[in-house]
Length: 124
Image 1 (tube, rainbow, N blue to C red):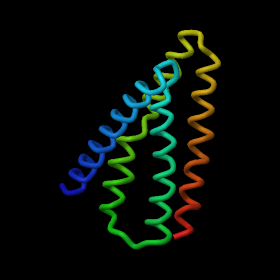
Image 2 (cartoon, helix red, strand yellow; image 1 turned 90 degrees about the vertical axis):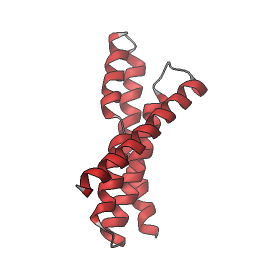
Image 3 (tube, rainbow, N blue to C red; image 1 turned 60 degrees about the vertical axis):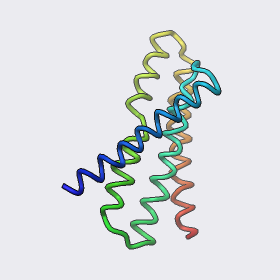
Image 4 (spheres, rainbow, N blue to C red; image 1 turned 30 degrees about the vertical axis):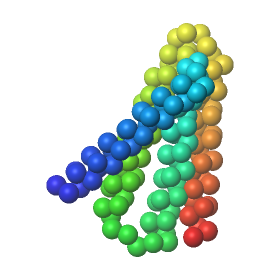
């Protein structure tokens, strides 16, 4: 039961963070490109690289932390379902270049952020 509570709490915090970030990005930069989704995906990739490397290679922590952070928080924060929907909507609107940029930036910058997170963890 504790496992479910940890995932639910982490997921709620992650989803709320995603919502607030997406609203902030839309208000600040407009809605023509889904920058909020890109931002949470890249940050989430960095955090999972950092956190999982630290907790599997550097630190001895309870598996409950992995449930709270990696499964709950990051599961609620990152938005690849939103990413795929928004990309398909761009394609349906015949905005092929923005769809291409959305896919490329989410994948490439996401991988880069994960790699940087893993590297940052190794510095600790």
